[in-house]
Length: 154
Image (cartoon, rainbow, N blue to C red; front, top):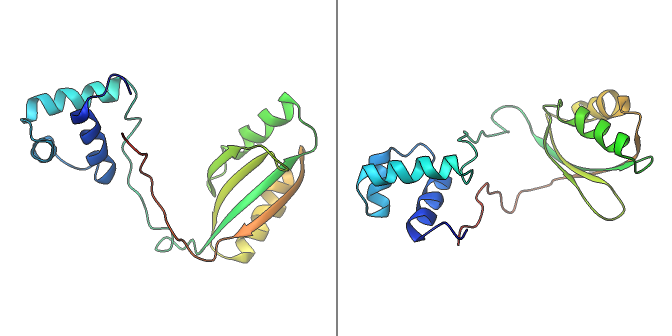
């Protein structure tokens, strides 16, 4: 953050809200002309502050009515088991986030499924094929209180 001035921070905030802003629109929002904004945005990309631009989709419109937070415990804490688990999980479209966590479980995943039958199939056929899993706990999301893809920029 030491390399970011207030204008860089404002550019990052604006792009998090709407990554489709044109350079001209973004320049207007941060009170600069388009050329320096374009140069700053390219520098922020090059330096890795901006990793990529994405469209945020509506899971319900795509038929994914259930979000599950699934905690996974490995049979043994070995590098091989951890790598095997992460390798397989990275190939599963239903898993949108996966974190290596501390506590009783080793990993926490966010899983999107169409319905309970779809989740049962996911557990039995996808997770069930990963030999290193020793246990899991599923928490079904009843409602969403907050959802944001924005990282605080200060």
